[in-house]
Image 1 (tube, helix red, strand yellow):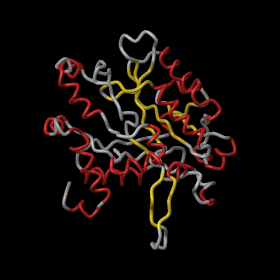
Image 2 (image 1 turned 90 degrees about the vertical axis):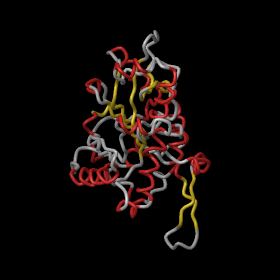
Image 3 (image 1 turned 30 degrees about the vertical axis):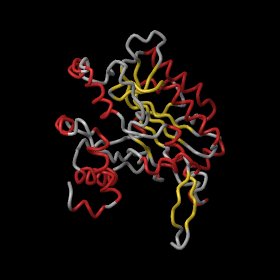
Image 4 (image 1 turned 135 degrees about the vertical axis):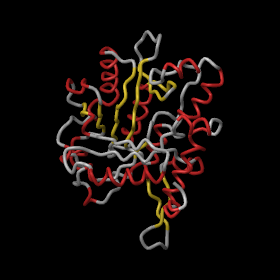
Length: 303
């Protein structure tokens, strides 16, 4: 979900004030080191049993409206994009974050939803993040994450590479090599989900779990199969249906053998975009959902 600009300055510092249990004073909680700050009795609890904040289309805080339309779009959209203002509209609906990787990490985000693609006509086989339009180079994003992890050695991140576009075997090998180069010994090899605890990861100095939704994961020990982190998708514009879906899928999740992603997101339909053409994703859907999540009592008044 989009983080709000009114708290952006605090999130950059990685701190936010919250009331202590007595309700009489305030404590400054460092979101940048929240895993390191967890009480000791949680250090040996499987990570799959902890609530870990994440972001959707995590990289899409910036997309390049001057680049070609991505291969994740239909031929019809690609044709429409020849009209100059169409890409400006696409940008308003492609950007799902307003914080960079570093700012998200400082704010406490530890799960990242990543979609990647090669770029037409790019001779060096570079890989980019993508959501309708091309974002930054994957390498730049990985280095930003690694820089944070080096400064915060007890924080663990989940990088979920779940969509690949216009990528052949050579592209995959290049991406996987980039991942190795970026994180090196921080990469945690795939193993039993139940054995993944903060204590174990700290002891081995592992900080990165890579989930790779492509058969290439079988060739590399440090790539976890995508089936180990299912992320059921409600695909709705209704807040009421979304919350019901989240409650149902969470109660039905497998008790063993995998992590689980709860996607608290609303997905626009074509008519949603048509109605909110100028306002974009943030003003059309995001504020509406955030209002319900902050003030649950409003659910009885809105759908």
